[in-house]
Length: 428
Ligand code: ASP
Ligand code: MG
Image (cartoon, rainbow, N blue to C red):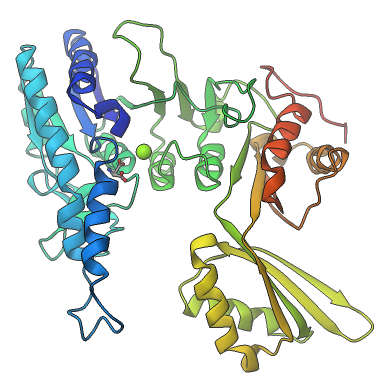
């Protein structure tokens, strides 16, 4: 007998028919003799609908929110958390109607404790003294994902996509043998199959690679859930909920590096259209200049991602290009204008018609030639690189958004990702 956590995303519980189907998948694990906790998301589209209601009323505020009743994140949480309350109850009923003992658990009932950062709370602790015994006595625990209870006794939520993190954290707290994340795709792919038709499902991927891919725009798992799984060395399997119980459904195992079987240099190509590029012209090339720019951004709560500096030797002036999230662009430009005199620059240019394309692979630690292969593949297609950023296991480039698909396909080809097995890159 094993203890397993099964997580189902929004499309997997989109309607009663899907919920009945999920109840069959859960029943199969119970019949196999396992102790099961299930974590559910809201029905697909429901969280967006609830957020829409909140936003509409919030817009009644004109100008200064202090004058208009202050922040509303606490109420946002109590509203958007309802989606998961509904699906956890419905799945419990579906299970009981199949003769499987089950009960729903809301975040506060477990309790799953979080900090007070409403709308993006972090899990502090999960009590297992009630849910554990309930499972041991044969009840499937159907847990509402995404939600918890904060230090101030209010409902909290874990940020969009947070049910993945609920599932991993619960698996850690329950010392589960397995954490299976069911979704609408059958695993993690070498790249977006909508762009590269020959994209391939990976059997295994290392935590570090998944972390890069998750934060680079492959939206299958919430980044925090991968961090948590990596910290506790808890393997997660990503698999489709569309299969029938008993079907072959291997999915992708996200696990520790040494268990990763395919020894590839590059495992995947990711892209993100959520970037915007800012260039400051004619900066004084003096110590502290970049610090001032980054200071202005962090004061405005804006994350700066890629940075590149160019210096003209003739007049000792520098240009600085960096990227911020597309949603932060206006805020960033305003903040820069406001500190124009302190930073001391001539002009600002910006462009939000850009895409960040990245290749990721732990093999980069021990192989050279990856950058060369990447840049050549882009050059052959006439794709200009605006900014480059690298880490130990990733190379990202910023390009004109128009070339996104072309670049993704070119890189997928150049690294032969459609084929399983090791890849030859130019020898060191
Ligand atoms: N329902 C929440 C969302 O849409 C949480 C989740 O599905 O993971 O973000
Ligand atoms: Mg999700």
